Amino acid sequence: MTGDTTQVDLSRDECVRRLGAAELARVLISVRCLPTALPTRVRLVDQDLALLDSDDDAVVQAARRHDVLTVQVDGVDDGHPWSVVASGISSLAPLDPAASSPTHDHRLITLPLAVVVGQRH
Image 1 (cartoon, rainbow, N blue to C red):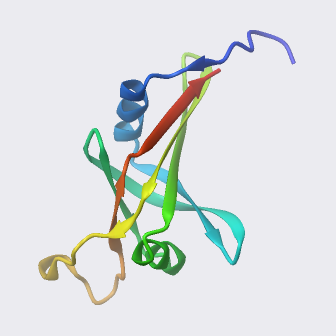
Image 2: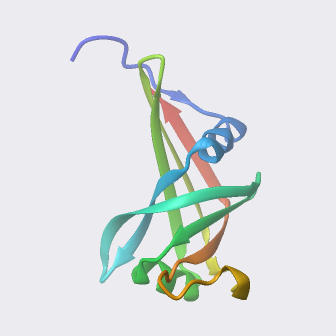
């Protein structure tokens, strides 16, 4: 491997900014005691709270149990890869009857951003 391998820790504000700019993320959970990464849509409510949109039963059940979930987003800026992860205790958002659809079983999951870290390489 050649080139600069310097790793730079990103500030919480920079991590939250990058998380907020992402439409898709991976939610990291344990399924039958095995680590799993599943796609999810992510939206920030504010600097301390994310909403995940998932129809995956494992993710919905984890939120119902108030499991710790982690979301991860990655990207490349000016040839430098970066990664941000945020973790918190999940819960199901209240159902909005007007937003429900008989063909989609998506649920919104709230994720307080208790731990947020990121690096750029």
